[in-house]
Length: 199
Image (cartoon, rainbow, N blue to C red; front, side):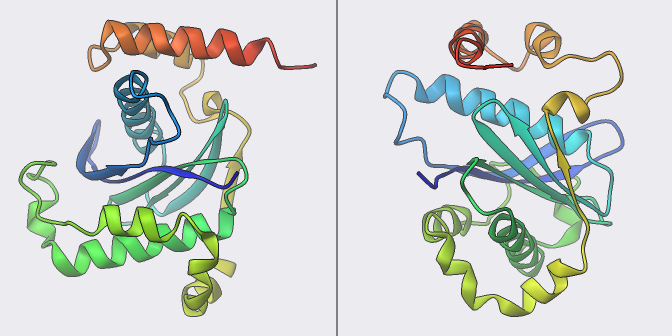
């Protein structure tokens, strides 16, 4: 099943990424899991943006998710969390469209000081809904031409994005941004997924 779960815009500072806007579609999860899933997706999104160099696109596998990220040269960044079936080309076309729209509607001086409450940009839920069907991107052929010239790095795991010796498990345990429920959800999901891995 092709599915987009989250779409977020960040500003990547020197040591930290600031969330400017986000939208989620977690309807495929049970009501009681949604808060923890959203919290974990937000944490993973921020971590990946922080570990992605400026002027870079990459797609990162994380368990059952694919994380597609684009950090522009001006450090404005967008990230999509999708399932593995969502087309990589369409995801990166959407990232370009979102950042272009964001730039047109939100002045650059707000990027460094803004946050999710202060930035006025209401289009993310619209993009998230519209692009649930990847065929919607076919109208964006001009952007596709630009994308064909852009190298997209495919990372096999989120660990490839982290610094040498860092592990996502350790970051999750140390994080003050994740609640105890979200940490427990992450451990349970990891155990559930590990039972199905065949080496």
